[in-house]
Image (cartoon, rainbow, N blue to C red):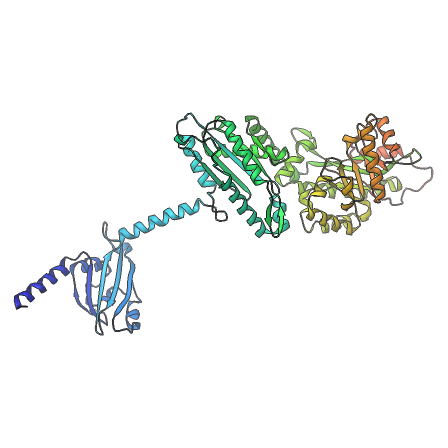
Length: 600
């Protein structure tokens, strides 16, 4: 090659370096700059403090303080020391200037380094945008089931609500597991999580079969989402009629009601479903979701494992329940609740009556504006809102306090037994038996003077409840099965329940004098209970004929309006004094046994 050719090549190289769109810096191993192009000067200038670019390590001392150590530690004769190392210029960069630089350093040989510097501002912005989109998408996905979450559902629903109405409709289905808490408590959180994953998989598998009448031209579709702990929702768009949405809901309930395999057990977990059709929807996604949840609660009240369609009247009832809940919370704090007592009498074989056999305590609410609120208006609200445990504890403490006072006041004429109804919330507390012990000790009561009552459906339904009942029996108290004949158990399974007393429901007693069928049922219940060493109580006796009928079937005890309506503590004392006059010159100081307490 001739000398002019060499000169031309050298000049071409210099021109390339001068005009290159990236900064290029050649240095010695100690960072001394041998050569740099104009782009590198422009990019690095914001980092120069003294106006000198003689040493690259010095220029980058604040931004990349480890660079000199990295070069010194690189023992290979040549190779990449670092690549695409980001340098944030921050306030050092002027308006419109690069904000982020990318630095790569290559060891050329045993004496030289080549550094490249480029503007990475746009690349970093693109990365940040991609990250923001990914984070936004992740924020709209439930981490456990990988389903869309509440935010994603509301976003999609709002888009549907905002578009013009067409020839098709849409529906929102709100689902809640009927027994998830019990399953989670019994099998553990890990099994509960697996159940939720299985529910989500069944939801996805059951949606959009060919039979669904979704208009392909309406831009419709289906979205299943997990929107809470054990709450799921399905958005059905492009539905041609309400009946098609109802069929989808029925198919979902059928699929979800099949047993799940959890921890080596077959577990059934049905769902309650509330549905809002487009004709009943408002303008806001949150309101439609709220209405669907209101309908779901109505489905639970109807027994669960079913679909209920939203009606406007439900919203009004929900608002009333919300007001009751708020007032009830205040009532628990301000001592607006009180307890009344309905006598439970002994039905002696000789035809006599023991008027002090026991009492059942019933909670009442003295509302400051509404007056006395009956239990049927607030007990269910207390159960749904989680207040039933506090309510039950109040009744237990107040009734035991009154019971101890009756013993001091009436002696042997005082009620011998006190019965208190239990809620699932109380039985769900591992330490609740100890609470009962403490209440008894505080009032000087014998455990045998207290009878705790549990509904038939609750006692027969849950293994954990039965375990807690055994713990309570170990204290020495007696247990009663309330409302027998209305729940899940039967005479054949009565021996499996850890109870001492069976209370025959008033629905049987009210026809005991007119229906041979009901007489047979009462007779069978009494005989089976007696064979198991259990006592019986006939509830709701209102006429002499009903009393005669249950006496004829040898019921041990009875209660009802025929004997007395529920009474305040003071009125109960007067009633007992009237029914059981004090003997002339007799002592009334001997302690008696104990009465009955309920939340009905």
